[in-house]
Amino acid sequence: MNSEIFGTFVSLCRSLGIQVLLFGPDYSQIRNIDYGFRGEIFQDFDYGRLARQLEEHLEAGVFYLYEDDMKLHYTMFRLPEGGLPADISPESDRAVCCIGPLLHEPISRPGLYELMDKLGIMPPLRQNFSEFYHRIPLFPSFDTWNQLVSFFLNECGITLKYLEINNDSLKFSPARVPDRSVPDMSDVASKALEERYEWENALLAAVAAGNLKQSMDALFQLSQYKIPARIADPIRSQKNLLLSFNTLLRKAVERSHVHPLHIDTLSRQLSIQIESALMPDQLTPLPGILIHKYCMLVNNYSRRAYSPLVQTCLDYVDFHYNADLSLSSLAAMCSVSSAYLSALFKKETGMTITDHINFTRIQQSLFLLNASSLSIGEIASRCGFSDANYFTRTFKKLQGKTPKSYRREMGIN
Image (cartoon, rainbow, N blue to C red):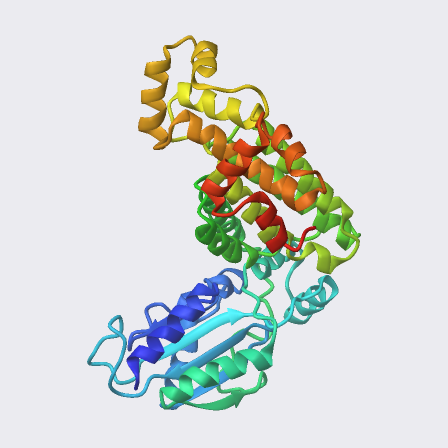
């Protein structure tokens, strides 16, 4: 068996939020095959029986795509001898891998009720039954999943065999729920919520740090936990969730000492974008767009690393870049000497105040050069340059070309 390819496949599944279990001969993890759910909802459920079924039924070198009686999908196989992963006992030649559970399509509310009726789920357990499905990862194409699994496992010398849902040799749940007292479902119901909140907090922390990759990874994990619609209108429900998400991200960015004016401007722009959407496919990419823009805001405007004095100067330049700014005027505003402010600013930012003022003004000029038909002289004036020639020289120094060349390359006359 190619352990390197198998390891890559396991890492890919786990990055998608899909559970991968590796059972040794004692099947000590067998209860995790469904996160312990059946053990809670079916009081007499025997995980040992399920372990014995796996042990007796699965053939070496064959993988099975199996849909159980709760419409959950699994990929299961016995690992070939040799080349076993490090976390499987080396003396075991009967190690079993189980990937799942996962869904290949969302279960509608009517479909969920129909399933609960079929399984005989008692009314007091139905809310918790629904919560369980909100934590199951969704891989929205059975065919694509089949191709993905086959690609990796065929390279490991493992071939496909299907297991039908009515296959008696591997049956997960009893025929019906025993007519007994209702078991305590608080642990099962709350675990998915706790995990969702943990990923939500991880996402907010990553955005506050301006870490786009960690933020998007956390968003993917968070998306595995489906949130039931609060109202009947699906578009309005999705918009409400996005507006709440926008608020959470706005509050997270405050931790990075981004000036409230920057945050409020972006938050209002994104709220308008959310409300302007008319179709579901316009809303689908917005969580990633929101995260990307808030991370950029942190990376461009976070003052967390600076002293209060330098923060004040940076923010003042951001909002008054078109005024008559200089080292002496900023020092007077802050009631410190020019020499002290100059030294502190250079130490913390690596730039002189004059260089930072020019950098900020040129960044603003890029927007006007792209988005307006104003003359070069008018743009220079609006960005705080009293002399158009000085603006051109500064622009060329920082951008490597003149404003006219920049516009020409951007296809703007």
